[in-house]
Length: 212
Image 1 (cartoon, rainbow, N blue to C red):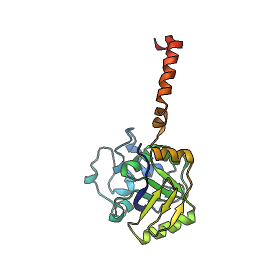
Image 2 (tube, rainbow, N blue to C red; image 1 turned 90 degrees about the vertical axis):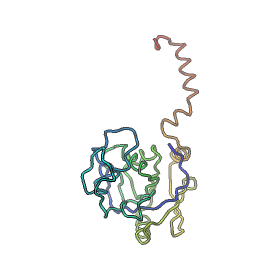
Image 3 (cartoon, rainbow, N blue to C red; image 1 turned 180 degrees about the horizontal axis):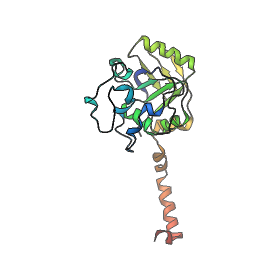
Image 4 (spheres, rainbow, N blue to C red; image 1 turned 120 degrees about the vertical axis):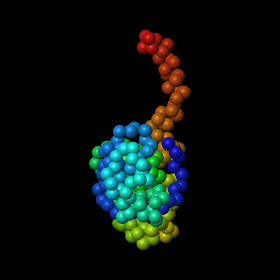
């Protein structure tokens, strides 16, 4: 997992509440568990006018020009501004995989579904919870200035908007540590690889029949 640094990126305003994981990455794309290749199908049913299925060439599909990510000002977005209860629905980890593969680093919303929230941290995606009133203000500011950029500093736990407003946010200390150091669950385990090997060597001597 990549280390989370300061993110300076275009903000895409997705003005929809209760966005569920099937809308984020539809069920027909869940056959793969490689964690990559899902970016082209993020919000598939909203981004395209034709029916999506695995193996399609995105360049040959009918794009929905009305959808926010298909508009030129937001084509390179790395920060998503969303509404309440984001990521609800089934507990598919493919949802944060799709965001990361697309290029998103941060999602800002008033609230998130618990499983999506937890899965995001484990995959290098930072979900930021802000008061709904503040999120409303950010929507107004971003809609008024398409292509606006925010700077998100995880170390300082601040968002600097394009209007030079600094907004502080809360984040769990352990999750912050993992993101800053690029540690997913496997990375955390591998930090103790020497101790694990020593234990396995000891156990093999104590109970050799287990290795027969």
